[in-house]
Image 1 (cartoon, rainbow, N blue to C red):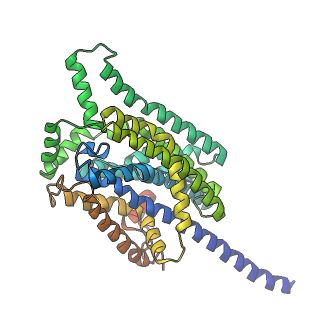
Image 2 (image 1 turned 135 degrees about the horizontal axis):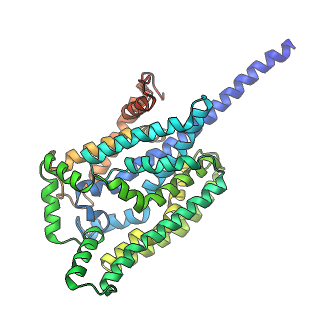
Image 3 (image 1 turned 180 degrees about the vertical axis):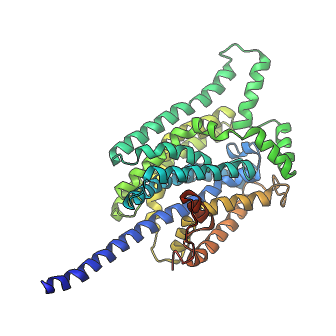
Length: 432
């Protein structure tokens, strides 16, 4: 019996060490994918920081639509637009499952833990939206995350079916944009010329080429004082999370559920065999990239008309976006090298994604808005990506050294402390 106990103890230790290694591998995979996502989101957000809002959708609106500027827009549209945000949504859903499972394992109430986190995320998001930048996504995630909680225990097949159903619903909702433009252009409602022109101008502001006076007003506003920008933000964006919930809530919830399924199936944890990742990556890219290229070619042929852009960017791309997201996740995990210098730094940036996301907004608004360096509208589309490269370098340079000294990123620590209603220990490196 004694010999059995002597043998069992080392076996149990080896088992624990093996489980720890598996858990560490899982978190490195998740953090690496999250790191790429938080860096990739800036590829599109940078346009919202540096130019009038319409430039995000339509290159003819501002920033250049020829030469290098056009190619930058097209590459982003085909490879990154919506895909990095979707990947981030996948990770949000996966994290929801991990957090609630950890709470249950500790004997805590998973609902209380989750909704405390979502409440404070909403507070952070609204502060970000109202005080820093109009393009906040955190408040939207908090509202959708409150709904996603009820799906966390469903099996993989159910999560996939519901997620696909939500994306079909999103596609149908987005059909209203090109149909609305077409209805106005054909005057199906027999509206007066003045009414029709006014409605078309609103579509042009969102998806086409806004009037020169509108662009001039935007440039003057964001090159002006913080007080003027704040006043405009409270005038136009106070309730935007509710509008965003109805506009893109089904898509975001669908991605969160697919993220839960990806975690439970082992996709996001790096548990699949490499050949399986290769298969999914190649199949998804082979379907989605040609579709995106065809949509891009159509918009170029139509000279980015308001109808073509609304149809291409907002509607036709929705069914193919989840395939691109899955392909990106597979590619990242195939390229990931645990222990490698670049992987370690990207994973650290992902572990501090909350801090990096909000600090990026502070840096960019300071660079571009009038109360900072006032670069708003002064750089062309391709030139703003020099700023992106510089911010990426900052993320990779500061995240790893911080986590070698502290357990959490600064805002992750604050969020965790507020959600738990007590200061959390922060000293002691999370990596290294």
